[in-house]
Image (cartoon, rainbow, N blue to C red; front, side, top):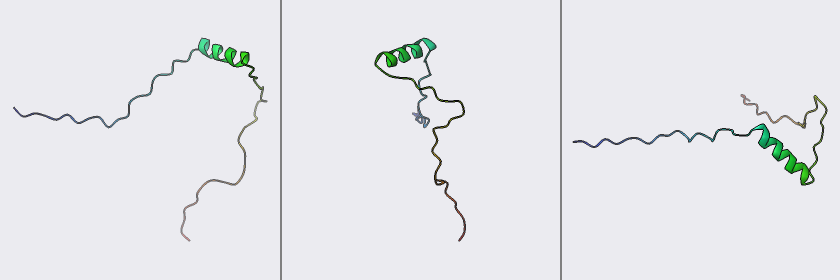
Length: 62
């Protein structure tokens, strides 16, 4: 009988599924506030992105 070799999978293991629930998120928020944390209200449409020089690379012939 000829022994057959099984090739190992090259795929990465799947990440754990997201299990956050609204109850656990509420508990985390309460713990944050109880430890002295503060939640800031940000106006709608405001972005945290800082605009500056473009970081896009242009490849072309000279």
